[in-house]
Length: 93
Image 1 (spheres, rainbow, N blue to C red):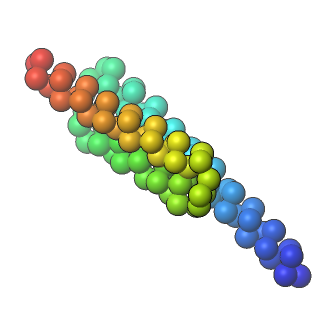
Image 2 (image 1 turned 90 degrees about the horizontal axis):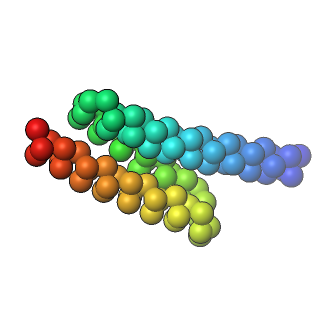
Image 3 (image 1 turned 90 degrees about the vertical axis):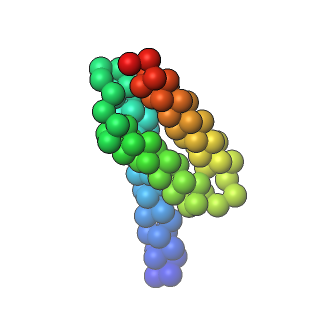
């Protein structure tokens, strides 16, 4: 019975990690879409927060795993580049 509970807990943890990775990638996709047609700052801010939130939660659940750090680093780099692109495009208007 204890092994079954442990397996179920590990399955839940894996599912939650996958959900966080999906949230991160959806945030990145949404941010890329928003930068293209028209700059809508609230949606862009939400997509950046979603990407960072998903990557951070994945890293937190991954423990000392390297993939969590890689996802978090990619999300931070993407957020910085997106913010710079957004600020640069505002200045050009």
